[in-house]
Length: 207
Image (cartoon, rainbow, N blue to C red; front, side):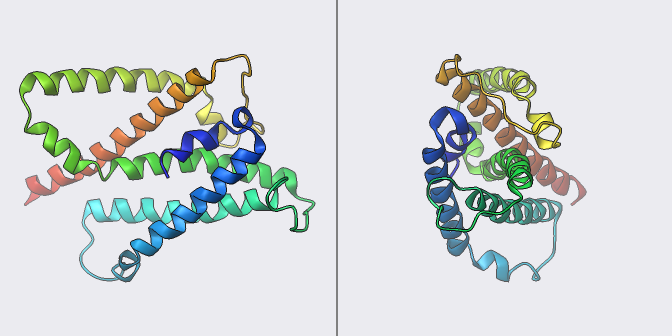
């Protein structure tokens, strides 16, 4: 699912047909993902809610709403795969909703993925100090670049609905577009990890 995100964000660069196919595949994977984790829904009203659990629950529920509304709006605007459906006279509204949800979904899904990176970073802590420093420098450099890319690619304007159409530079090498979006993804994955880590540390201190 995470791999498909940058491809979906490159809407005009990869073509409308591929965009619709990738979006449909992502939606199917989302359904499968939820079926595999269906026990989570049954546990929502059980047990105590720690800070980490509250954060993850709000994040997951927000993603569920986005991952239902976004493909639905995309299907209703389809020009290739779902043309058998009746067209609606609200395409401009659907396009606006679809784009806002796309950027919020990209950010929140990256945070969601990062919130589950604890075991990976725990393994890293067991390695030697030099390796940890090198990794921290690399991640810090990518994150700094991602902050610039986040602003340069117009994420704030898209997420707040201030920009009605996504801008693509067709003369730009595709690799630069994907590098920017991958760096932004990594930035929010790290944010997700550190939020969970911070809540965990806070709990240990209070206990």
